[in-house]
Image (cartoon, rainbow, N blue to C red; front, side, top):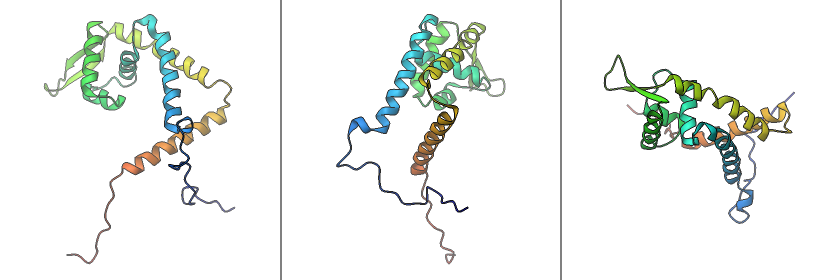
Length: 174
C-alpha cells in the first residue's frame, strides 16, 4: 500500500488576504476556546481565592517541584518573568509558596509549595479535568486524539517557522 506524506503534497493555502474573515480565524477560535476553559476554571477555583495567574503557577509547582525558579516557571508558563515575580509575591503573602536558597548555588532561589500551598494546588487537577471534560462533551476518544494530533501539527509547523535557517556548507571551501 502506497502512502504519501501529507506534508510533502503541495496544497493551496487555506487563507488568502482577499477571503480572510475574523470569524474564520483559527487563532481567534483557539483563543476563544482557551478563554472559555480558563474563565470556567477561574469561576470554580474562586472558592480558593485564586485567579488564573495564581493557580497556574501552583499547579506547575505541584507537577514539577524540583529546582524550579521564577525564571524557569516563567519560561514553562510562557509569561513575563516580572509578572511571575509579582504573582509569587502574592502567593508567598498567602503562605502558599516559599522561596528557598539553593544548597549548591546561593545565587539561585528555588520555589517550593508550602503544606498549605500543596493542599490548595492538589485541588486544581480535579477542577481542570472536569472543565476540560465538559468542553469535550460529545467528543469520542478518537475525535479527541485526532484533535490533539492536529494541534500538535499546528504547533510543529509554528516551531518549524522559527527554526534557524542553516546555509548549506560549501564542501570546496578550505
